[in-house]
Structure formats: structure tokens, C-alpha cells
Amino acid sequence: AQSVTQLDSHVSVSEGTPVLLRCNYSSSYSPSLFWYVQHPNKGLQLLLKYTSAATLVKGINGFEAEFKKSETSFHLTKPSAHMSDAAEYFCVVKDTGNQFYFGTGTSLTVIP
Amino acid sequence: GAVVSQHPSRVICKSGTSVKIECRSLDFQATTMFWYRQFPKQSLMLMATSNEGSKATYEQGVEKDKFLINHASLTLSTLTVTSAHPEDSSFYICSAGVRQFRGQYFGAGTRLSVL
Image 1: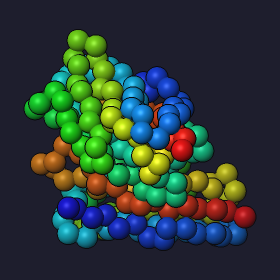
Image 2: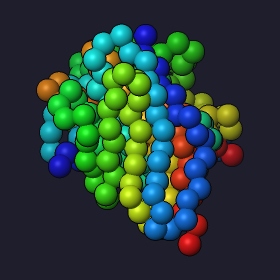
Image 3: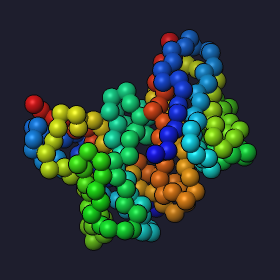
């Protein structure tokens, strides 16, 4: 069975400092992993996806995530937070049957 | 990139009325469409999966007669909330999947408020 755990429900960082949003997954197979961002009153936007290619995945807006099979993790990082990064972030795992499993989300606050 | 249009973005209705939400894939044919519901402070919950021309597959606990899903073509799926009540107020999001793509394209969502 697949599942996704986002370890922090809320993360607060100062503008210009690094961002780390943690995600651990469990999967019986080699999974596809995604990070989505949702800004207030907006739909989900795909940040990046891992599909068994390079373990370090670069996404939009300076975000990247590293797939670590030994740790079953897919943490999202960004070197320098911007005010516009304040949003809800979802880690998602997809199984071979095209079923998506969402984490509970991490709310990112960026302090000026 | 692929675009999924969801309409309306926001709807306010009286209790007892029905509301229809449309989800269209604008520049591709979606073999599968998904409907999600997001409760406040919670993650998305998959409500149902629909394939063009066949009946939708509902997740456990989702009332089929209350949330009617129609997937009439490869570019359009609709969700009708029948006899809406205040507890149906939520954020509903559709997404469209393409068989060869290991991901989904999401609509912008619909905020439903039932008075």
C-alpha cells in the first residue's frame, strides 16, 4: 500500500533563508513522486516530479527535491525563500494503477 | 503545457439546490478524470475516478446519488452536487490524466458555499 507523510504541518522561514519541506513515503513499487503547490484560492500547480530518472529533480521557481530510496524520502528544498513562496505544499505519490495519494500538506509562511 | 479548465471558480447556492461543476481539458484528450474534495486544513481526498464513456468509480464513503459524475467525452467531465446542504460546502478540484503521462493536470478548483 502507498502512503505519504508530510512531517511538518506548518513551516515558517525568513525571506532569503533556505526552505526544507519534508516528505516520506511508503510504496510497494518504485513510485512516481510529485510536489504540488497551492496558493490561496488557487488550484494546484505542479512544482516537480520524479519518475525514476535522476534522483535530484529540479522544478519551477527554484525548487528541487531529492529522491532517497534508502530513506524513503522526497524532501523539497529551495536555497532562498521568497515572499511569493508562501502557500500550501503537497507531496504526492502515484502507484502503478494511476492512483494518487496526497500528504496532508505543509503550510509555508515566509516572514519578511 | 496542458490546461484543464474548471468552471465555475466559485458558487454560492441555497440549501436544496443542485450545482454543476465542469472540468474541461482544453488542448488534450483526457482518458481519465478525477474529482477531489478538500476540507479545510486537510489534504485532498479523492472522490471518484471517471473514464470516458463509462460509469465513475467512487471512493468508499462518497455518495453516488449525491455527487453525480458524467464523463461524456474525452475533454469534458461534470460533477453535480445534488440537493446541496451546508456540509457540502468545500473546495472541489478536478484533474485530468493522460495515459502516457505519469501525472495529472489540475483545474483551478471550485469553491462551493451552500447557505
